[in-house]
Image 1: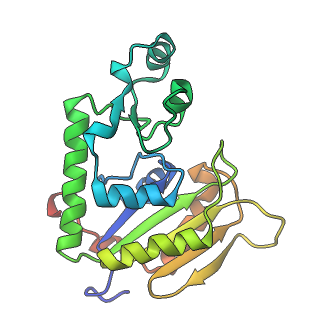
Image 2: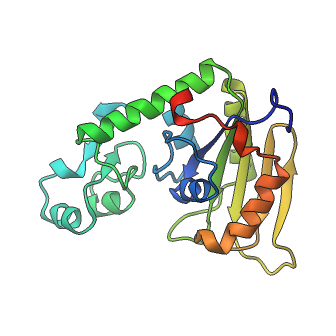
Image 3: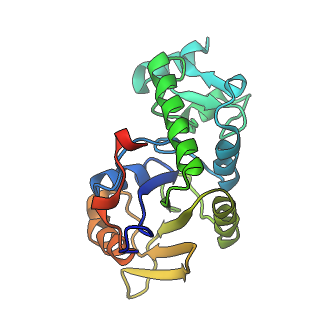
Length: 232
């Protein structure tokens, strides 16, 4: 991976929450925004659905436009959010849908937010068309909030999709404390997938900084070879 021709040119978050994006940014591995940075996913199939369909605006609900007193109060307290009818959504429970919003930090009723995601999807298309070597990162915290574990079967399912569509490697990190005497452990490691258990349930970057730096060193990521915002 030290060779320029085989080194990663992009490091991109694909979920499950914004923690992956935050970690990559603090590690100075994020060079530009991409589609999944701030999306909240609860299921691997949702990630693949967005890869395949982008945003179908007929499925999008902007909380700014919902005429419901509870939602209006939540908007005032937390800000406008974007819901997706097929992801984390219950038609008869708007409060649940708000708190589990597909886009908790963006309001696609705002043209600037909409244009932001249009640019993100364009970058993703360019990465695919140009066959750019990419490290996709999926981090999940089973003990955070109501989040659940991700099975190895689903990880392999996602990896198979990515390998069929991109020039890539998938890094999966599971953050969960167990009573074992190690900081992190490789569960799967081959030329297409690296799956690592980090023996720490914290979603705070500083609690994971040392381990994350060790992992990305292990993967031989060369920051100098990562393409920048204006190159994609």
